[in-house]
Image 1: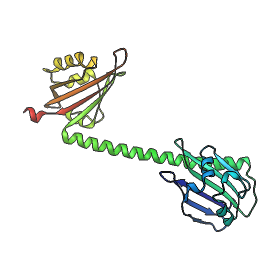
Image 2 (image 1 turned 60 degrees about the vertical axis):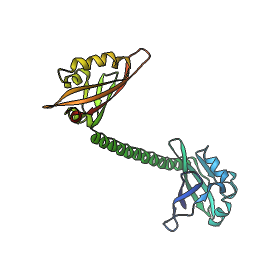
Image 3 (image 1 turned 90 degrees about the vertical axis):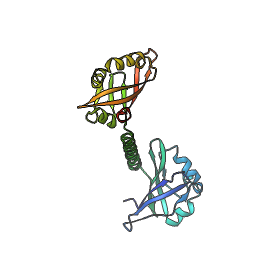
Image 4 (image 1 turned 45 degrees about the horizontal axis):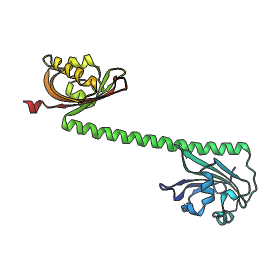
Amino acid sequence: QITRVSVSLYNQDETLLECVDIFDLRTNEHSVLEPVPVDQIPVQSEYMKHFRYIDAHDATTDPRLGEGGEPFRRKLGLTSILVCSIVSGGRYRGVVRFAYVNHPHTWDHDEIAFGCQVADQFGMAFLNRERLQAARELRQSEAVLNRAQAVSKTGHGYLDGKTNQLTLSAEACRIFGLPPGTVLGFSEFLACVHPDDRARVAEAWEKHGLTGVPYTIRHRIIAGEQVRWVDERAEMELDEKGQVLTGLGIIQDVTEKVK
């Protein structure tokens, strides 16, 4: 039965507090107001960066609200205001305001706790939205990378030194004639190499790969019933004990060049 509830969010550079929505219980209507420049409410803005809420029992005299918005509060008849900060990802994003109009009120502990919970729900919505956006951007980047690799017939493999497992990209799997998402051990990778080139590939791995020295080698592979030539470039990252932490290999199908 709170008379008026509103949500306001900061713009990108935090110079404006933009009203998203206001609900008025008396009319059962939603509306919005013009954005408020932050420099017009400096006291309240600064306070909310450090505290979760302002429980202004008397909205006309509470110093935490500042003098900038006093004419506006008087005009609307806002007599008691609870302001709860919206925080997401460690950033102060805006506020949820609960207000009584022309009605004195003292905010109790349960009301304050509830107001902060509502603000936290907005914070979670921000966090979820940003995670979804990051996931979409990652998928788009992966799609562009996969397309670029397909055009250039260049794939890559990532080696986990702890498990000694090599994860191949989609294009690398295509080059080797393997299902997408294939993960190989070194012996399984070596089994894909043409029998006449296995000793040379194994020697390059022992001589360069295990010492952290980047190397490039051209060799044949068996992809299904096809023999393909590939250029392989690899570089390993070692720990302080000389053990392989990670490795990255680039594999390009150069069969047409060799032929």
